[in-house]
Image (cartoon, rainbow, N blue to C red; front, side, top):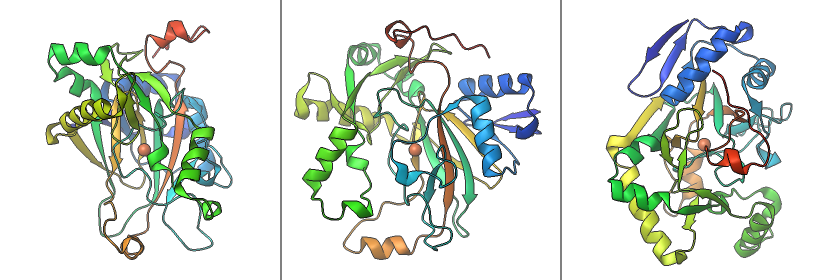
Length: 308
Ligand SMILES: [Fe+2]
């Protein structure tokens, strides 16, 4: 195996996912936590092999909404805008805003795996990332101390994608349904990574909706200031995907946004139909460690230290 460190993340070459040794797995895991993101290059995997690898590497957890699931593998979340009847599955235009996958859940899935299946022909398929440990490090001591005392509230409500069966519901009813299924959750604003022990701001403009005990107006002031700081060009790293890539990243460190453009204006549907076909298979996983160090004591059960 050869490891190439990029400006952001690293590439692993010369690996065959179907015949990994224990040593290979340990190297992948330590590279992941050290570099935040790894790209295992030149893999040609069946869907079953992809799921088998995910099960070997960590614990895949199917997404809470079934309309995203691959018909044969519920662990796979399908992001696809392919409309042909034969190939139609999953949900189109996912993740085009800053977020950390499943942060709106009580027990967020801390790792994301991605396998590109269909790539656009004329444009690059990219995802942008922000390392929130770097953002924390760039803050003043006073800002760090203020944030460390805060609890943030997260919800996926503003990013819910309306399904065909929601057609007779008004937006208020849809919001009430989302609240019943997945009410807002609290996480510490600053978490300590359970493996590297680094401090990280766990927040994103897409899913972090409020600061606990601050009220909506003051929350907006605090969060806008935080996100305006975090989303500066100096912190944003763009990665281009290629067929054959198997990507893994740590959602504790990274927030991300897919490279697609938001549709704006009056003719949204006309704009969307012009988009090129793309399909990505995502699996979200638990890695045997809590979201952050302090949860180890609070979890009520012994969570083993991971050896990598
Ligand atoms: Fe995402």
